[in-house]
Amino acid sequence: MGSLLIAGGGIGGLTTALACARAGARVALFERSTEFNEVGAGIQLGPNAMRVLYGLRLTQALDQRVAFPDQLQVRHALSGALLGRLPLGATARQRYGAPYATVHRADLQALLVDAVREQGDVALHLNSVVQTVVQTDRAVRLQLGDERQVQGVVLVAADGGWSGIRRQLLADGTPQPTGHLAYRAMVPQADLPVSLRSQQVTAWLGPRLHVVQYPVRGGDWLNVVAIVHGTPQGDMSHWDHSANAQDLQRAMVATCANLKALIGAIVYWRLWPLSIRPPMAGPHQHAVGRVALLGDAAHPMVPYLAQGAAMAIEDAATLAQELAKAGVFASGLTGESAVTQVPALLQNYAGRRWQRNAQVQARAINNGKIFHATGLLRLGRDTALRLGGERLLDQPWLYGGGPV
Image (cartoon, rainbow, N blue to C red; front, side):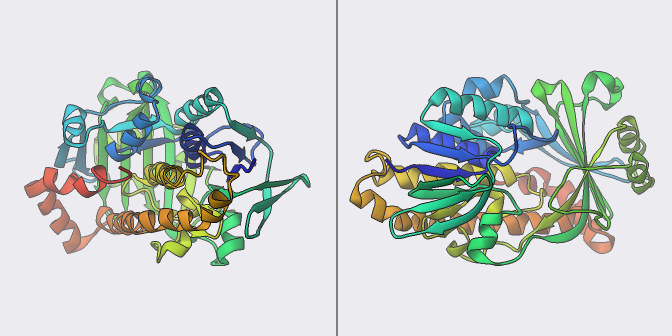
């Protein structure tokens, strides 16, 4: 019996494993780390991502772990003035059929691991590095770092923004630095002064910097991301670097008292030099033969639209739909027609996904310019937000789109 192979045990790889296993596939997932773990960072899950996760019967598990912010507000980082707001909570549920949530990345990964293990038909292989990929007319074969060889009929490359599989297939280099540095921190809200605690998403926009804060872990913790301009140091493929809190405090010296108080109240930060690729140029960057590129391996993006994880989740659902609707899983991936259909099915997946992902990548890049604006552009941004905040902050094309 042929298998669906997945390289990478992050959010995209695990969501793919769950979606495909629930559609009838036998899955083998290979994760290079010795355990499933994510460094402490929060992510935002728009209604488009939550619809997919709820559709995978994860509603109860999610609702026990995520936070549901009541609003998104945008403030001026220097004056502290409110520029605009977007109601979330019940409003998002009513508009888009699912809530807007925020979650600790490690909590979401653990939830997915539990669901995959309970599902069955998924073999999870830790400490398994995919070194090379060889395709034939009927199969794809992996050479692992421990000299094992594994064969299946489909490979999903969910091995991150620095994907070795992508480099082998497309030979298009590596992500390039943006000149932006992301400082990340999570802190128990009980450890903060009452005035700094929050159950909403707040984005502070300043010249050449911005800060985003939101609750995670049911609201008990606060996630804070501060992004400033700077030169990265060290290996950019590893985002989790130690950071000097004083460096960040110096970058925030001109900001308002409330924002400086928040930054000053957090002692421990991790540093992430942001690197990206240009927006996707075509379906060839999503599928090559029997290999589907998924998530950051296909479309790494800056976090200025808060959709990196969501796009990986959407990719997973779309891929499972394409393989399942042609009866590939029902035949156990063993029938002649199933085996020969796979490349065409992956092209269908690529055709459905690449333009949406390219649009999100481009919007995120543009948001970075707007968030960090100076001079007349900053004045125009602030005026537009004051006059039409909710209309500008809502994203019907994004939150209402995705797999159907």
